[in-house]
Picture 1 (tube, rainbow, N blue to C red):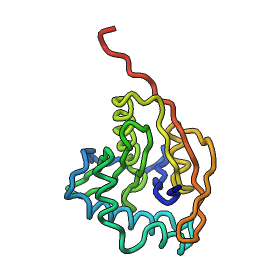
Picture 2: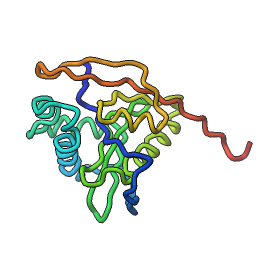
Picture 3: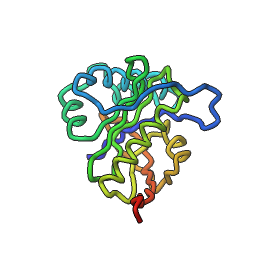
Picture 4: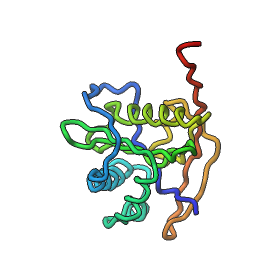
Length: 184
């Protein structure tokens, strides 16, 4: 089943006048789950309001998220969180061996601060480690410009339905440069 609602990334302009923060990107830990789910909900309902209807937002990020489903998904994927002063300000996850970004979100109050770029850099590095030649993502309208600014190319427009709500996603892809070992 197509999951058009799964991807959103909050566009972070390279022309941003907001200063970047001294945050760190680390691996997700099981006890981050509640904070990650709250960040997802808040981001969708505050940042994506210009691109989606209220009903689409409710369907995409319901008040009661399926905790077990999220837990299983994050455990199966390689997930990173960005942390600033012990607060999770972003997260993203990659399906290992598939070269597919599953989710990438930035906290509503930390837009344009380099958070998504930093997480994406870790996801790209991880994909290279798994010998992936490219990265794919099904981006929302909200995230499309961000991904394009990071070298992704739109390959197709996908239509999917969730609870009778239509969602259009952009299938985007980025070729990854092959890392050359230092001793060559």
